[in-house]
Amino acid sequence: MKRKILPLLVAASFSQMTIANESSEEFFLLKQQIKLLTERLDKVEESPKNKSKKSLLDRISFKADFRERYEIIDQEGKEERDRNRLRLRAAMKMKADDRLSFTLGMATGGDDPVSTNQTLDTAFSTKDIRLDLAYFDYKFSNSLSFTGGKMKNPFYKPDKTPVFWDSDLNPEGFALKFKGGATKGTLVGFSVEERKADSDTYMLGGQIMHNFKMSEHSSFIAGFGYYNYTNLKGFGTLYDSKPRGNSVDVEGNYLTDFNIAEILVEYKTKIDGEPLSFFGNLHKNTAVNDLDTSIVYGVNYGKVKGAGTWKIGLSYIDNEADSVIALFNDSDFGGGNTGAKGFLLKYGYGIKNNLSLGVTYINSEFGQSQAEQTEYNRLQLDLKMKFK
Figure 1 (cartoon, rainbow, N blue to C red):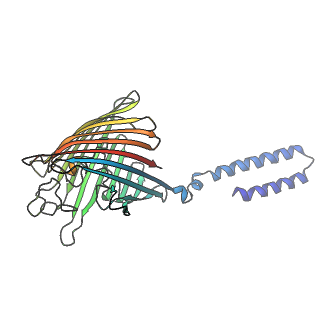
Figure 2: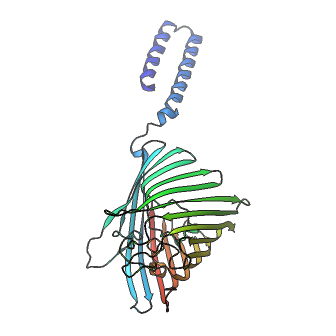
């Protein structure tokens, strides 16, 4: 708009100069009027209304991460296994406007719901890339939003420890998220299993937590959750018919329902400017009276945020056979089985910005409800890269 008006102002100014070329005072006043009009036009063009008309490229953001992993698996009763694996994930987020956005993500791997790793084998064969994320997010306000589709897990995990939810799991359904001050909450309805000739399985649940500020660098987080799975008892185990430690009958059907209550706590502070956290997470399946509890507690120190930075963490995990659905918990600890207990040690070191090394060691055993337990140890060496 300014481009159209300014030539008219210039033309008008020359006209006035011709008429009043002998009056320097009138010429000075005219220049002042042009200056004021130009400033007003600048403000109009910088108004929020004009700024909201962004191009498509301005409304799109992109991020990706790549991980190369070498791991050694030592399970009692089996030959030691070594393998090289990679993981590539890429996601694009597009804003329709200030309230509505859509995210599309792709990842390597097959259809396993808790792994996007791709093993490098079968004579250099091509590898799968599949739909990993596809969801919309609508913000009613700064404190309330609604998400639908195949989404990132909306629930809080103390220090990201994947006891109840594997870190690669992206659930499907709807989530209503709200926050008010130091309180945050999530309500969900997830579609777990659609059965053509029988009742479907859904997960209806929620989580609420509060962050108690204790000092400038310290806070205490406490929360509660409840997750109710419908139509599981008497039905076959999810995904691939493997019980993974859950109790099943001779036909492979679940012997229990899963109505899981959760308590979480986490204390965060800083030492020498580096983050330090202590955490605990308990899950109890209220639908059964035995083998019904999962507990984890641990400590983490440091953060990988650039060259020379590091992080170390140690967790103790004990998840009884029917405390959680075995398919959705950590697929690495105890070989992905419930009825497992042991230690999880992690270390990360920053090589440079967006490039780091990681080491994970799992010392565990599973089959707690059986006469003899099976030792399961796993070592993972990772090279991680991030792009955004």
